[in-house]
Amino acid sequence: MWIGIDDTDSPAGMCTTYLGAVLVRRLAREGLRVVGTRLVRLNPNVIYKTRGNAAIAIEADGDPETGFALTTACVEELAEFDDKRTNPGVVVASARPPPDFYYAALRDYCTVDEAVAVLEAAGALYRGYKNRRGLIGATAAVASDFPDLTYELLAYRKRSAWGTPRRVDAASLFRAEEETYPHTWDTVDRENGVVVGVPHTPDPVLFGIRGESPAWVKEARSYVLSEETACEQVYVTNQGTDAHLIPGSAATLREGRSYLVRGTVAEAASTGPGGHVSFLLDDCGAVVRCMAYEPTKGFRRVVRALVPGDVVAAAGSYKGGSLNLEKLGVARLADAVLVRPPVCPACKKRMTSAGTDKGYKCRVCGERSREPETARIERHLEPGWYEVPPTARRHLARPLARGVAAWEEEVLHSDQECRPSSGMSNK
Ligand code: ATP
Image 1 (cartoon, rainbow, N blue to C red):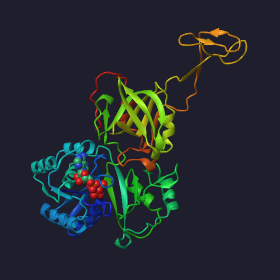
Image 2 (image 1 turned 120 degrees about the vertical axis):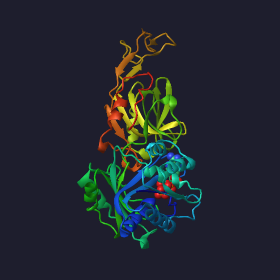
Image 3 (image 1 turned 45 degrees about the horizontal axis):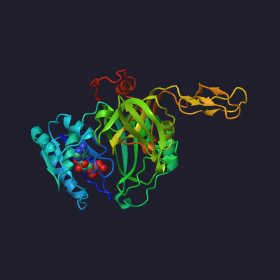
């Protein structure tokens, strides 16, 4: 059977992954063999999310009625029912629903009624609490399909420690990353000198380690020195896969979805209030503003180094009319040329404009010239991919430590300039 759970936490506490870890232990105690545990990230732009829009799926062998009774009891005991934004959903399906609902919840928006229709068609047991919104994530979790996947080891705090400052030795986290990168990533942000894998919220998570296999996340974990943990769970996840991205064109972007769009830099970057940097990307005449917010730190240097004519692919969510950058591919660099008035051959002073279409004139000796001086500007950027630092990375964003997906390279180097979309999909 496949068990799905979502929407059990609130900003004040709990975490659906913790509830999943508790349930895994209770299922085993009742003799139901747990075969798999999934941490499923869904559309990061959904406004109802508490933190990272995660849902949990557990694959287990045994009687679905027993699984359902254990899961609902666990949710009823642990979920943060008092918060009006917490609306838990529980699903137990003996046959997995088709993955379409998962892809819709990952890349688009779904309704509770759509989730219920999927559950009825699958003959699943389900229970939605309060406004039942959690059924969307719980259904998507059991329908999830991971053509690409990563792992996360989550360590949970003892109940007596919840809400108190976390005791995790930062140096040991840096050591864990040094010893295991690139097989694990985002435990710390070495460039900015900060810890990433330890949350600051009052939930039961002590720390998380992300990596390419259960063996690597456990290896990294072995370096971490911390307060005693209550339990630890390794989840299979769609984190770090770019599964949320849709190969898109600037003319058809829809609010709250995430895309990879190829185009030409139309206007160089400018820095706005708060240090946010943006540039205009032209995709066959449709222009979209691409934003690198202040928390993306050093990534903004890459954005500032772009000049009009550079051919790039921009990945990110389309929100408030702009694409919020997660990653940027540079396919071709334009020849950047500085055009300015020439130097007077007689007096060696720089001439000035003599007026519109009148060329240049030396203000000292009156010498005239029609041609400006042009010089190639040295570029401080190489073709390739660039990403935001770990501190600013979204859960679903694929770190360059994992390489770039084949479909992303295809988008970046596609020569289908300004022709209808090839129908390429991220699968
Ligand atoms: P938790 O640890 O409780 O899962 P979270 O940050 O993952 O915290 P939730 O509290 O689960 O966020 O809130 C997300 C809510 O949005 C859930 O009710 C979920 O069912 C719903 N949801 C998720 N994806 C979509 C979607 N694509 N369209 C509509 N609703 C969605």
